[in-house]
Image 1 (tube, rainbow over the protein chains, first blue to last red):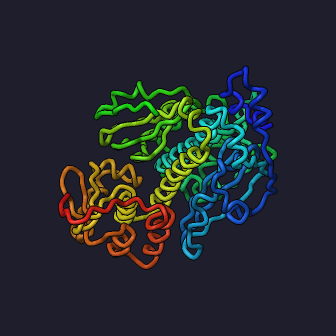
Image 2 (cartoon, rainbow over the protein chains, first blue to last red; image 1 turned 120 degrees about the horizontal axis):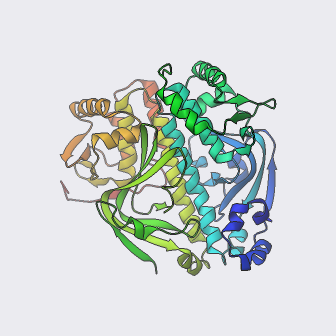
Image 3 (cartoon, chains in turn orange, yellow; image 1 turned 135 degrees about the vertical axis):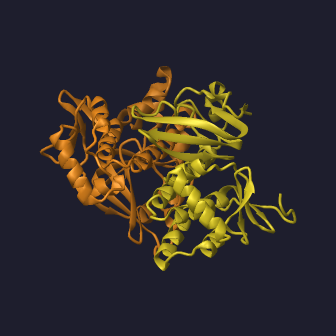
Length: 237
Length: 238
């Protein structure tokens, strides 16, 4: 079942063993509706589990301290392990908030699941790589948020989303996320008014487009257009 | 039983690390690697040391960002390939420990993300030294030693600042006695045995900034349950 919804996992299992792996890799699923989510209350004590795999939907993990906030965007293919550290924080200093943006389907990779798939080490390796990949995306976003030119920062951010979760269509790459200007500001380390100005300019230049359902679309030739943007001189920090 | 590969100054053994994607994981046994993530003209870095898992396929990560791995301190890396994972299959907790360590890397990254939003570069550096002290510091009678070759440029990449302000901030921290250079890029965090104590003791900022530092201390797990600081008794200057 899991291997049917997550094709990348299925791809690492030898074809001759795929049917047996599919039968063993059944999982319990949990659906989360949009709104705040207390991940620690639900899954604060799950040591021995491999993790919670996001099958569908998007969730954010906010770390708030005084007036500083950082947000991590988590979506399909990402592995969560809220029990590893979220409960360590003293809530009077740091507030951890999980928020479901789009309905989320979680696969619960518990101890029994880990035992059942132990015959396929490549599956374990692929599941572990999801955490490593999430770290790499976090590093990429950290680097993007250091770019001094705000237009380039926002454009790279959308490319980053398109690479990670975009669906390619004839008219461009659709990023299936209804992010507000404020959320984009938090995710890029920019001030909201600057983001609104930058988005207006990027829309006018055809770098990004808001869809009727409030998701976003970027052009297929965004990489080439970024070269133009980086050469332009009107982009200020 | 695993295959172990040495990595030298030039990462010359890197081709030997290659494990096809999804077929294993690498584990740094000793030494230290710097993993850079480059977008346009900016670069952020992660330090990977003993016990850190990493993936061999990191370099081909994204179309617009480049990954690069460089040696900071020569050491060894273990190749936990599919054969290894199959042999340890009866003990699924081993995989869980690897997962925990990967999450720990994410935790430090998140702390650095919050740090890079601090206005003052000296505050960022204080926090960074505390994070590094927690993970790789050696407690001596003089304080916590960081025996890592940390250039000003590398420190800047770690805290999201350019080299010149880092040099200025380091000079200020030295003048305050908060840090003592030991040569070869090594540093001493004087008068403390716990990075968190050093951090709070070295802070000369506003109450609000202090509160911010305390928060990042917790975020990075400094002084928490994951203490890994090595204590060396009676060897001043080691």
